[in-house]
Length: 81
Length: 224
Image 1 (cartoon, rainbow over the protein chains, first blue to last red):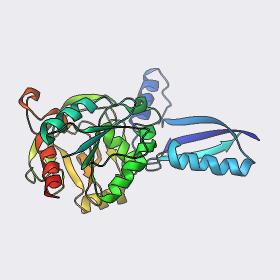
Image 2 (image 1 turned 180 degrees about the horizontal axis):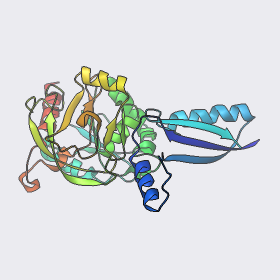
Image 3 (image 1 turned 90 degrees about the vertical axis):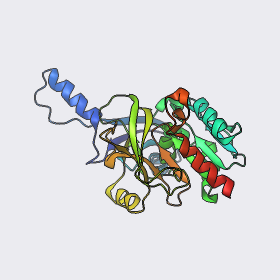
Image 4 (image 1 turned 180 degrees about the vertical axis):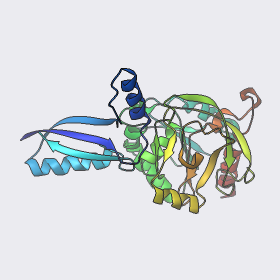
């Protein structure tokens, strides 16, 4: 079956995110005064063929561990849409 | 000394590295394309700087998963010397041959300048021709050189003397934790560093502080 998934990769708590900080500063400069913090991450929309949902989930988790995330600094979440 | 330089699409400091290896090691190094599933017999393998795969996904991430890296991992297990400079350091961490990760520079800018490096460990295969505590000049040129490791890993590499070079005299250009500029593997045969020793080896470069790194490796190889 064709599975459409969304993988989200975010920085772990406590890991400094200079890009998020710069974006936050830029938003403030645009007048969005209420922004307290921005953390930048990545989204991967992945279409894959798999036997079933469970196999797809297992494959997607393995993809994150092996390539999509660097688990030293990043967390990931897999969502089948 | 037989050296081999590993090439990826987007490597661009390979020619400087090849020139340094030839001038100091006495013969031109072999070159190995990233699609190879084995690497030729060599005393020293070098992963040079550049922007492999355009830094897509994360710096070094795609290159670290290319076929040649499995072959390089086997050479590392045999105890062969492996040096990764700049993007090469990023590739070696992404491949799991060295701990930690190189994140975006804290100041967000690409930095291309000269820094000071303190030799923290002068008893590695790459630093025996330096004095402990010696401060060298060395150029850096990178956007992702901000070394980070979790507290446990950091305590381990610091405790085991595996921090080889530290940015000195307030010249940390990228926000690296503990001013770390270069580290070695647990067995000591794999070293990664962000600065470019290959770009300071002769008078035409304006200095020769990088030379001793290659001379150290050469001595280890010739003594073997």
